[in-house]
Amino acid sequence: MAGVYSENDRLRVRGMWVEPALRGQGIGGELLDGLLAWVKEAHPSQDVWLSVNPGQEPAVRLFRSRGFEATGLVQPLGHTPGTTVQEMVRKHAEGTSPARS
Image 1 (cartoon, helix red, strand yellow):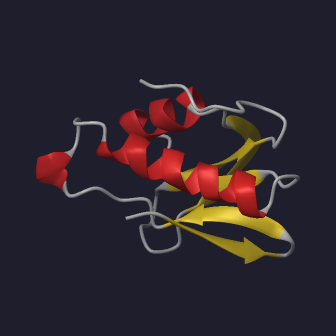
Image 2: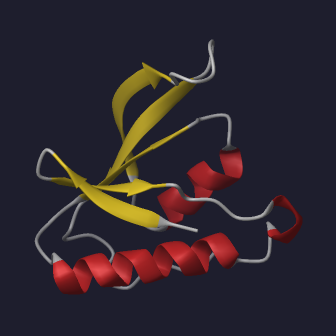
């Protein structure tokens, strides 16, 4: 599953998740590509933001492969003490066609 919502005039990816038994098959990339295609059509001039646990290396690699870059903001993950999330952004002018990984 993957979703996007508007928060303080920013589009944010929320709830990106693939069933563990199905991971590593490109499903996350397909979900993200579909979401980014919708954003490009519905909100062509907007950047897309997200937060990701930097310890989830496959997710970080996926987001980077689609043009997301770390902003430098790191915050605690509220429901998991001791864990943080890093903010990433994909500028609207970047990656007009998502890369495949």
